[in-house]
Image (cartoon, rainbow, N blue to C red; front, side, top):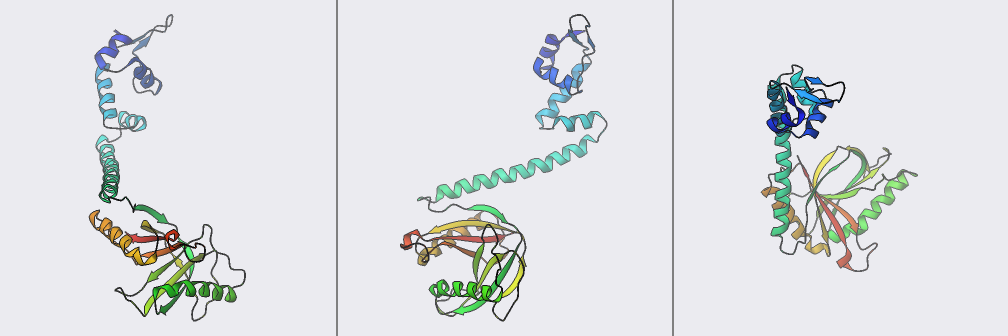
Length: 263
């Protein structure tokens, strides 16, 4: 019989760990002196201790180790652990890639984040604009038209609205645009205003601050980032106008978020 201190040395487990595994029912002493509460172990229990230590080094949880000791298929549990660690590896690699992309941007002007936009009800409207700047007058007009058609219609909280450019290429004029704004319920439609459910969407997000004429730089950075990191696009880019001519005097303070849907 081995005292707990002796068993600790041979098993390479601390006394604190042995008491913890005893409490969890994984490695109980062979006997406990009823007078002084000393714990004693059999040498045969070193094999059990070695298994516990090995499984813990593989990042198995206490509950998973208990399942193995109670007869669960260890191969199935280890296969599940492979899948879990693979996902963690992918996340770590993604984080490393983001860090590298940020460091490659000498001025650190842009930073890409990944987020999920929940499912939403939106009203939409499409038109053809002569120039991009015309959108700043057209979008408020769409909102007024929607409210006129649906008095009392409320926007979703937090607010979410964006524009999509429907042409397959960059155009200086005759620009096809679609405006979307999240609302709480469906409403009446007309030739301009339509309602639909926008499904949950995963996006890459980047913020552009300053004149809209320079937003192409942000698009270039975002598309390069998506390509270098193996993302597959899943829809049109969305432009969310956070600050602009309606609330900022200087174009340097304009803020636009670009969201690129991905699979």
